Image (cartoon, rainbow, N blue to C red; front, side):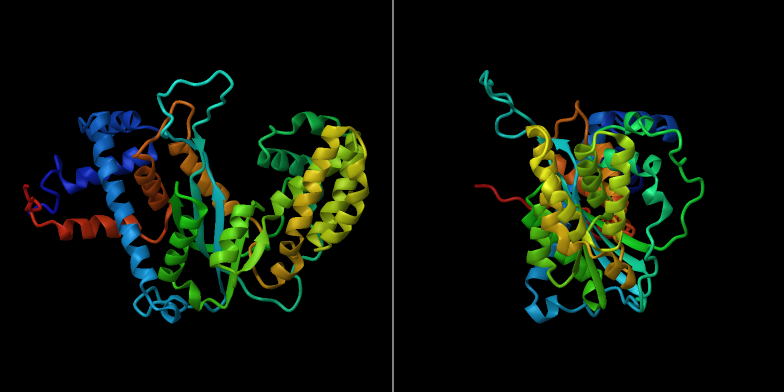
Amino acid sequence: MLGCPVEATCSPDVERKIVVASTECRSYHSASVLLAELSGLNISAKQCERITQRAGQERVAERAQQLERYEQLPLPQQQQAPPAGPQNSWNQRVAAVLIDGGRAQIRDERWGQPRRLAEKVSWWREPKVACLATFSSKALAADPLPEVPACLLNPLWVVPRVKGIKGEGSGESECAELSPQAPSPPREKPPRWSPEPLVRSVVATFQPYEELGRLVKAEAHQRGFAAAERKVFLGDGHVSNWAVHQHYFSHYTPVVDLMHALSYVYQAARESTPDMDACWERCARWIRWVWQGAVGQVIGELSPLVSLGDERSRETLQSSLTYLTNNAGRMDYPKYRQAGLPITTTMIESAIKQINRRMKGTEKFWNGGGEPQLQLCADRLSETNSLATFWHDRSEKQTGLRKSRTTR
């Protein structure tokens, strides 16, 4: 017995290679070419798709079973770490949940129907992604870094990053407007102050945020997060993220990503001050206040500026003011640093980029295969050996017999 389904056309080892190649490459065609060149396997793109989709569907089914088992537990057990689960030592560790969304095109019920002239049809949808991570850190008696790092006061370091967050290019033109006396980019990295990441698992779905919240809750239980004394929930400020936090993780400390907050600070400074040098002077002052947890001072200085300028400027300034006002309670960064909590969402941003590489493309349109492939992308990014367990258990479950069929 080879440990493979009776409908399989190749061995389990070859199937695993096909799934890995089809998930790591940008397309099934690329996977087919790679398998031929590196492994001498003559596997067509369509066969790569069929085998990968079958494995992905099995993983989605396993995920649904895990969720069902979790939700059938009594409430007291749901709020405790599983006795047979991973026995993590939570001393000097933090449990973190980070949520964000990617982009992919999905064929829906309107696909193939004629468009009306005035109708704007977009196939872009948002795969929802979450990282469940553990971090190594200590809670301290005081803020370990009360002074803002030099890189955050350097426009040549900050501007490209905050512009990139908003998808507005590299920011080179704006940096070029700085006076010659402007500081050069820092050559040395600042000393590490943030918690050290340990192990992450990734959950992803095209379903609504409510379904994502349920899946993440079940995964957090499996990871034993309930036993952690310090828990944190990080997001970029999107209202859907905080709805998930409120409904499923309200006992986790909510933290808005620092760099997203600074992107709105810079946006407001730039819109209210056309001259780049004056803009950065104001922005640097606001960045210090944000770093020190004094977001109220930024709001107080920004509020009178909203009524100035043309309509577009007022809308932009109001957008920044609304963001800072709505998220002020999640921006007490000195407190978070003192507690040893992460304050950026770089881990989930990295995961989104890697998932987008496979799922996103102007030439890619997913239908029923989107969810299975997305699940495999998440599995490949997880460090909890979910795929290794899947392949082992899959072989063990095979009997060599077809499932009985009833005729009517």
